[in-house]
Length: 189
Image 1: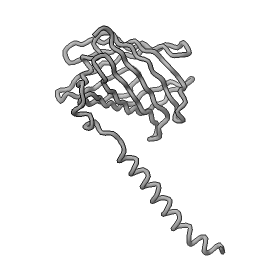
Image 2: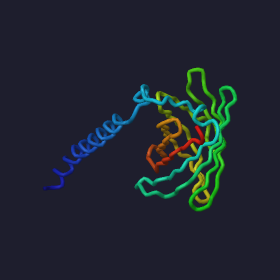
Image 3: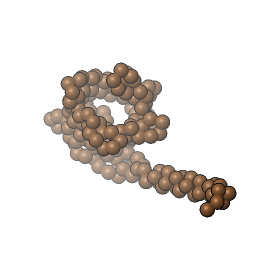
Image 4: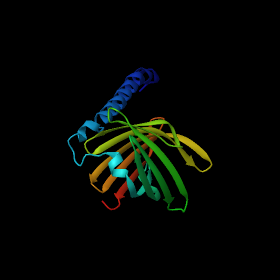
């Protein structure tokens, strides 16, 4: 094949590849879950009811490859005053490191939630439907001696009166960098 013919075919091949890439992105977007998918599911998840008192959680961070890079245990103490739920989260990681995060979550008139924590940039916004809650927020993630802003796409699913599963996708510049999975167990219900 001569060079002129190859140059003439290059734009056509490029457009074909770009079209296929766009199609893959669009089809991938169609596959995402919607909060409304959970509207009829029970038990109905109310964060103020579930997290009031003491709850324990076990979780892990997985890299994009799926490798479980870090495991942790969390003790959560929840207090409720009016429309405000305060969560005192005490983390212990598998390497012995500890961390505390205090969430202040406020139920809104439309039954959505807004939250703040020391390592959250701006405000977390959450909505519930049926047994699920969907949060979006930006977290300052410490890695070695640096901090990175990562977007958290956080889904919680109440399984029964004492059990909650939490799955979070972490991304930077729209690219997933990892996932966090937690299993919560409420004490003494």
